[in-house]
Image 1 (spheres, protein in one colour):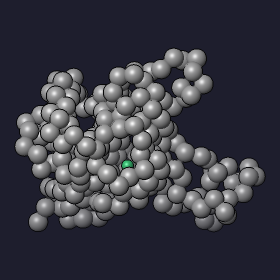
Image 2 (cartoon, rainbow, N blue to C red):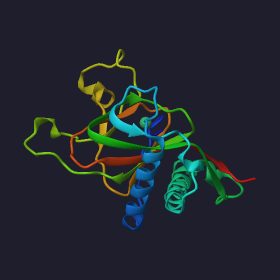
Image 3 (cartoon, rainbow, N blue to C red):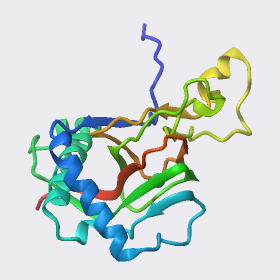
Length: 220
Ligand SMILES: [Fe+2]
């Protein structure tokens, strides 16, 4: 007799990576972003976000040593993510440990003022997207009712709401957004199509993050 099975079809995999050298590069990164902002003055336009400065989408084309260090860490993390989530494919391949390449299609930084918020959106500019927390700022008064998930990144479930039921059988598919706390040196990686955003950031010190859309390929 065959075993009964429950197939985990299309799970969404979110990577969490930590940069062991973050404290060594943080100060220089912030200086670089301050310099960038002084030179560009106005935030990138054409979005619905509030109380923040966004750089242009091609940060990876800037020539800067500390930025290169950050992008290297990000590229390594993307390659690890790609290898792990596609392990089944690699197991079937002749070369089980191929050299991978990462192509940055877009990269940018965001500096949140107090009250800064990013509304739900998806990217679609590559197979994977990320956020890297350069400086998380500070937590507001813990008694503040709005303090919950201060500036946290959230991901929205990819299921249609209309077909979900509220019974026990449907609980798994009725969960709301999943929140990830901001931590310095932490990088979250997700498939670019997932809707996501950030809750309002209520700290006083600026919060700074770097995001990117990339493709990972097997080197020819
Ligand atoms: Fe985003």
